[in-house]
Length: 426
Image (cartoon, rainbow, N blue to C red; front, side, top):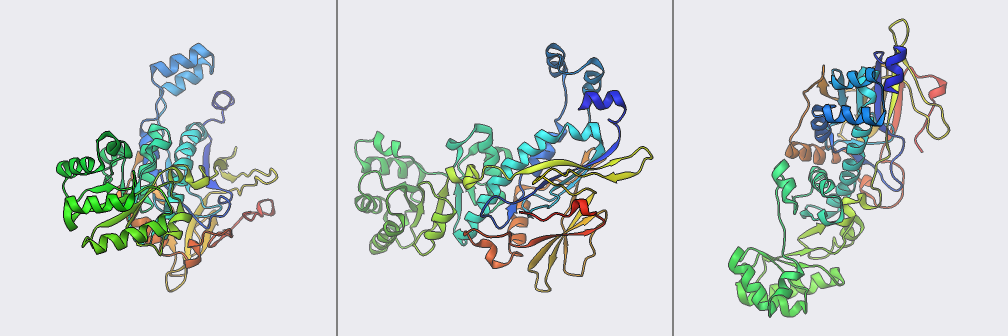
């Protein structure tokens, strides 16, 4: 596309690309944006060095004119979008890229790969933290995904409310709080469970977390408190009937005087199991596989489409795809979250061609991220998490439901769009 448009003179046409999802994954009531700051980092590093240009030449991928253009590539346009932690719905213009066609079209794959992955993890994580009800969630999924995806997943989970990660690279790179526990192999290494507990307590202190289900849970809890007294920080349960087992362990700990010792549960948890554990005396959840795989939906279905381009007269004209089941709405978009006077979200207003009118209680969603090629819209992980928890509280309460259903609020288009664009999310 780049080589052809450079040759025919259309490469420099002013264009608007939009990244959005036509629908939410089946059963989801809302989605969560994550990966925006990673995307901005990737944009700044998006270059074609000598080795890349040589590879393109050796493979005959593009001609010399195109390779010369790529060697000087720098994005000089504007990007606006939803912030990390923001809620999105079908049709939400999560990212709006404005530049020449040539500059913007090259970014499709990197933008989609980052936002589809990170937002899928964050969307699952948000459901988990919502149902955790204030009990901390620990991200523990590094062993279930690619090593770099593990770091990105830890960040996405933190944005959606997870308290800590066991991935130290994520903690190092992004400043996320870290936490972890011993594995069964540490207990099995020692001659007795008591020896393992004594070793861990001697090394890490009484506030550590002891894994108590390697052999016999009741015996392990008794041994743990004999060693530490009531000052033991926590015990971890990783198997069995967790709701009933947590109740039994709580009773035992209380009877032994360890009333402040917390109970952490792991074992392939997802949002459904976390919801089922809500009545149990559990103090925290360690979540791995389901989190880093989007809890059954490892992508958000984001697409990246040209929605407007400059015509021969220099005017920006809407363009739209008409394919069955893959219709898009042409025109540059703006977005507001319509809210009631009480601050409860009631609609996603998408303005085609102009910003929808604010009735006084609405919140503008698109934030400036890049201006004339310069990144201006970064946020910290802590800011992104705070933003997510705030905007999630705007949603109607039924948005937390785990049963199949429609999006929590409807997407409504306002402005000048023609019958060819008459479209409703499925």
